[in-house]
Length: 408
Ligand code: NIG
Ligand code: FE
Image (cartoon, rainbow, N blue to C red; front, side, top):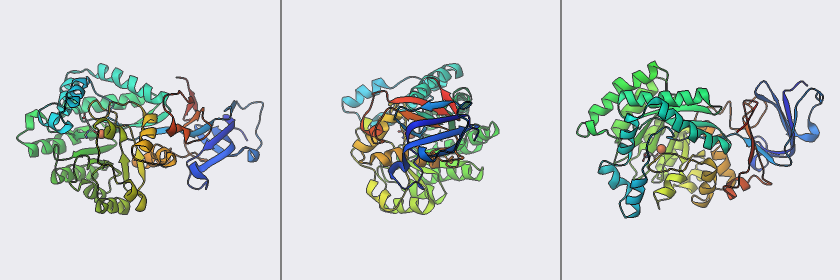
């Protein structure tokens, strides 16, 4: 065999469902890489012969290799911060009250309209570095803090540029329908028309987005408006997804599922009919424990129903300045378990295999198997559950992206 690198003295949590052990675990494993892809993975004792003299050999010191982590829901390109709002909320104001009084998302919009592409790029780069240090190799980044054509395009361009200049793969999502901009506060339909007829064609013309998202909520867009945007996106051949059922149950998830959405996200208020709709369409349920924690939400997402109806659960950081200023994917593994009672295996699946499905990249990443892209991490842990159990101890030893060892 002629390979580019071989890893031994490791255990592999392949997350491959066809490996029957929990986590798709292979204890005392070996993994071989060729041309940026996994060429072979399995028990070390079965490793085919290879040219030991010419193949770089890496020893994992008995640690665990997992697929590179995938953060499938972030808003990481933004300017400014909302620490003042945090203080207001601690004095009793709710997220909803702040949004209705012109703060919230709109205050970040003001900062983003003023920021240059270079400033936004630098802010985004730092945040991407923070995620990458924790083993993230693929991330989704949304726009949605522009709410006018020029700024929405600016945010998406920055996100695309980050993908070009950083080893982390970036999937971009156009979220023009994130909030109602002040200029359109008495003409929401007019803003929806702008999103569909001006912003979306401009985004498509520059190939700036892989997917389209909407915030369907009583403080944002109603079901009909949401459906109009998602249908236009789908007709244009883009993936669709939705912020839904975060503060109330409007039925957005079921509607998006019928349109074939890749994921519906937040979903604390989702009911069983909604869960059944997800199950029928193969739509993922993206759980965002950072926002649940930071907004001190008490309504739990319907985890037992999602399990019962076998809906793939995804875990993501939702990193943003308002509801989840927590730029850490590993923290989400822990919070997914402590706050939502996921098992550590469900949590890790939600940041690997299921996250890949939510982004439509499941044929390429999310699982360690021959033929998949060689995106993986080596962790200084003795069981895979440790990834969710402990936080902040610096357990990410190495990251390999498309077969290249990333030095960070
Ligand atoms: O995912 N829910 C809407 N959007 C973001 C929050 C954005 C903000 O508050 O800036 C979220 O939680
Ligand atoms: Fe979000």
